[in-house]
Structures are given as structure tokens and as C-alpha cells.
Amino acid sequence: MVGVSLRRRATAAALALLCAGFLSTCDFLTADIFPSWLSYVEARYDLRSEVKVFSSILASTENFLVEYVQPFSGRGVVALFLPGTPNKRLVFLDSNTLRKLHHEDNSEFSPLLAAASIGQNMVCGKVSINTTDFVLSAGPTDGLDGSRQWLVRIGPDSDQYLIGFNSGMLEVNRHKYDYSFAYINTISGTDWVAPYPTDYWELLDSEMSSSGAGAMFLFRNTSDEEVGYLSVFSASADIEANPRDFLNAANQVTGPFRIDDGRAWITHDGPVAYHRGDKGPDRLVRYELGTGSALSSIPATELDSIPFDDNDELRVLSFDPSGRWWFAYDRRTGYLYKLRTWWK
Image 1: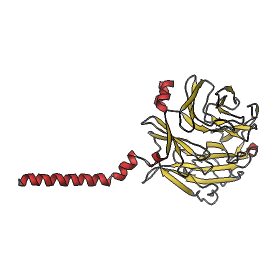
Image 2: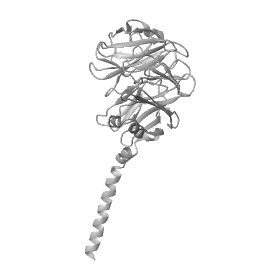
Image 3: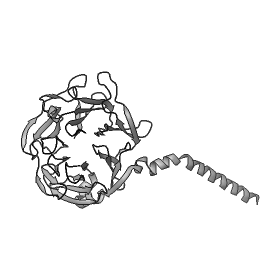
Image 4: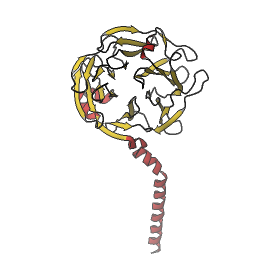
């Protein structure tokens, strides 16, 4: 009987130690199984299945592009670009539920997803698409090079600029079109002037400003450490100067601010950048517009952040420029997630 009692006591003690160990790792398990970003999820889409149907090769690389696109009139959509050979696929998802609405396969698509200046249309590469009835028409042609590019529009039925970046020449290329995509001209001269670095630049993002009349540019510089600058021009026509200093000539500059792994995005509520945790968790950090000074080496002010491990398994894809939503892909589950931003 004494032996049985001792064994029971030993078993109870072992269970107590196990429970104590479990409780001590409760925060870890909660963060790992139920990460904080999950509370912001509004909808999800089985992206892996869509990719596999389109291309078995693409399914292994998962090299795609997702953007929320809101035309001047008509339906806003979540647009999903899937590269392929020769055809590429453009998938249209409902912006609220991520329910699939339509898809098109076309060899003229490229990594350019943006709303156009004309009515209900968006563009993907050389193709303009009505997001309501999905009728295709001609889009931009001059200046498209198959790389990641952007479209800055001035207003309804007004001129628009196809934006690209020549990394060899460190030039921001501005290909100007009218509202119907009739080509006007190309401007490429770009100056990099102190107090900003004069070399090692990359353009990460470009968007229409919150006023709808200006242009925003998010640059990364790697000359010393990886930092970013967001420049804002009140009038899009101001970017036509040749050459153009995109930092000193801007109406507002935010930065320098830390960027890790070249991961940063424009929102009208301030740029968001990825921070790889040194001794703590990785984070997505939002910065206050107009703060920081390159001349005085004062970094931009951090507004808020959220823990997020942006890695091979989990990837931030884009932010809606208005600051309402952001999109992430979980490679483990194959789901594309639409999330509300943590500051709204």
C-alpha cells in the first residue's frame, strides 16, 4: 500500500510539473497557434487551389500579385495576377467576401494592377478591364517592360502616368498617357541630391495621393543600412520636371525609417514597413506622415505596430492605399487573407 501511495504521489507531482510547464508556455502556444493578426481577418480565399488549376509550375513558386483596385466609378475588386507562359491569369474577387467573380487569361497581362482614369476600368499590363462587366479594351503599351510597375492617375477622364524604375540608371520613368491610354510622352531624368544618399536606390511602391490629385513614391536606400523614404507631391504634374528630384522637391517627405528585406508599403495613413525582430517578434510598423529628417538624421516617428512573422510560410502581399485593408498569404494553408488594418 505504501508503494502504491508513493507511486500516486509521484504521478501527481509529475502531472503538476507538466501543467506548470504547459502554463509557462501558454503565451508561446497562443502566439503560435492563434497569432494576433488572425483577429483582423475579414475574409479568405483558397488561393492555392486557384493557382494549381492554372499552373502546376506556378504552384511551387507562388509568385503572384494581389491588389485592391477601386475605379473612379463602379465596383471595387481584389485583383489577383498569376504569371504564366504564354498566358497570364487575372482573377477578380469580391472586395468584401473574396468570392470569385471572374477570371481572364491573356498573354498581354503583366505585374501592373491599378485603377485607370476612365470610369469603371482598371489595368493589368497592356489590357484595360471594366470591373463591372469584365469587357477588355486596349491599355498602355509604351514603357511596359514586364517588371513591377504602377499607374498614378490625376482624376476622372484625366491624364495618367505609368511609373517604372530603371535600377541601372536609378531613374524613375514616367510614361504619360491621356485617359484613353493614348500615349503622350516619357520623362526619365532623375536627380539624387544631398542630404539624401546619391546612390543605391530602389522604388518599392507608387500611388495616387489621398487628395486624388497628387502622387506618392516609396523609396528604399541600401547605401548604409536599409531605410525608406516616402515622398508626396501635391500635384501629379509636378513629377513631369526633367530631371526631377523626388525627395528635395517633394511637398512632404517621411523618413528615414527602417525597412527590412525590402518590405514596405504606402498607405494614406502613413507608410508601413516590416521589421525583423532581433530579440523580439517580427513586426509591421506604421510611421507618421511628414516626420523624420535626413539632414538631421532623425528617424520618422513610429505610430503603432503589430507582431507578424513575414517569412517563407506567411507573406504580406499588399496594403490598400486608403489604409482600410491589407492582404497576406499563408503558404501552410494556401489561403489568401483579407484583413482590416490594426489602426482603423
